[in-house]
Picture 1 (cartoon, rainbow, N blue to C red):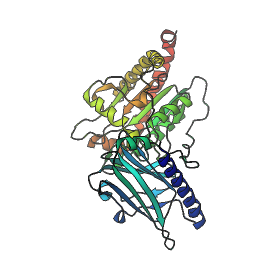
Picture 2: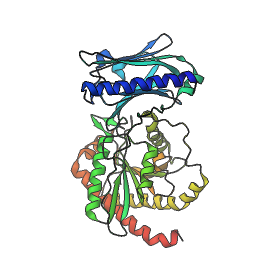
Picture 3: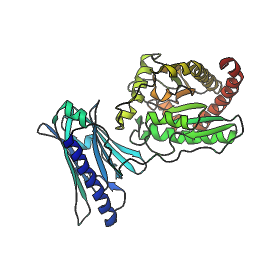
Picture 4: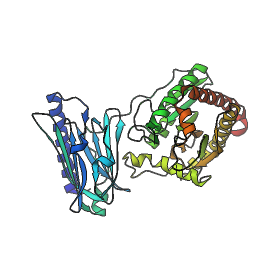
Length: 409
């Protein structure tokens, strides 16, 4: 990073910290509202100007990310209701916009840039009379080398995002209990599929909580959720949480939407370097883009699939995951629950890459299917599915234990 950029970031850090103290002294609450009518992201000269009108000043930070080029703004905290890309973007150099919660107490704006427009300046002014604030940023002309050198979340003292809230862990269960990590897909700034006001992130969190209660009441299970609130959890962190919990099995829960497709019914996915079909490849690509969409810095991340030791660990784990997928689908059929045609599939889902934990991703249905959407909204139907998954996990646990001597000697 250049000396000029380091100085600029230090000044920004001082500005942010000074404003934080000023805001607390003024008695501002933590939640601000965006005024879309007075906010805009516009082309200006060879660059971009961002103007955000807030009902009050809040602590904030800004940085850029490369590959692809993105502008990221974090706030504590902003209500984005009523705002979207169509309301704010006016020009060709900002390609897309996502607004939402990144963690409890923190909001994020991610702007997809048409090119590596270099961040030249940023400032927030607060009206001393009304407390209203105006945040203005300027991005200059594209310059790939400078953009790449500046990109990355800044290491500003005192401004690291807070750690995720403690995860929901069941009380210690009997010996031999199966520790299940349930992973409600998406969350926070990443809503997942959206149809008729229903968001995938909300449905999956609700179902994960319901399934957790069913498993705990049955006995013989311990349960951990990768998220128990409307917060964003990166794909890498989801896998790390499973490891930290000492998971015996990892189950990721989703309900996607397909444009123009008539697909309906549940399906189960396991990990593979190559997809079983084009639809599975496209689905995995959408899921794997979650971190990019949420403005996560992916620079320096290793490809966890490439490590030889991890590949060796999967020689034991993958057959167990494949067997779990078969048991899940057999139990769904026995319960007369709808399944997708060819419901057992595989693709390169990043969230399934724990080499030592049998992992599956369950698509409970498609929000784009009126039939599935009606089912997913129905608590009685979800209860049937939760009980079916309980039975399937119990059957797999018993079969896996019986095969342990054969598989792992």
